[in-house]
Length: 194
Image (cartoon, rainbow, N blue to C red; front, top):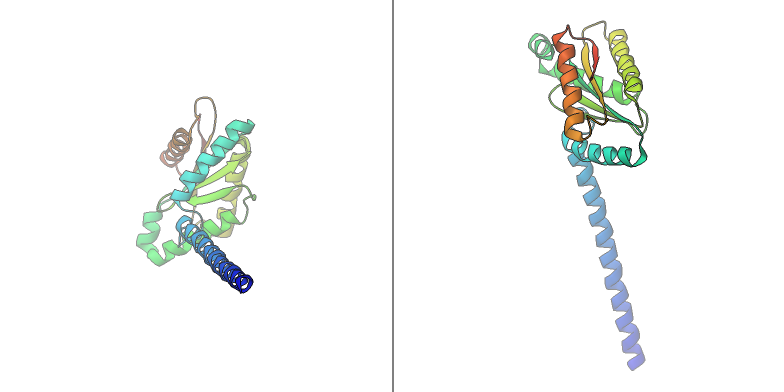
């Protein structure tokens, strides 16, 4: 009789554990889904600024450990307000989706793009020198010009982690400053942070 009670208790314990692990696995799946939804911009389907902030910290740490370069490209669609005013916000949304899709299509697996603001995007390029990031920006600029009959142009600012630009805030600031220099000097150009 004791043996039967012990067996029954073991079976109940196993059933409880199975149910616990099943619920735990389900919760993990939901958490992963929530995390994914919280890191993706719903319009453009690229990463959002929150993801950029967290992931860029990790990439900078990795870059410092490995002594490999890391570059950032910040780009902004030129005259985006005029496009919205002339063609409507739905056209503006279409342009944002088009641009982000175009860029995602040419990035390497370890690069990523994030929507930084309204029509501003940041591309993080691990293991990439500023010269190679400039080549990528040129490629994006040329693709835009060849694919849209000059309706859309973009300005680019590029920075690289260095002794002077040695943290996330400075890296983004340098790229942003270079971007605004491109805008002030005629737009549709690439400026590299000094």
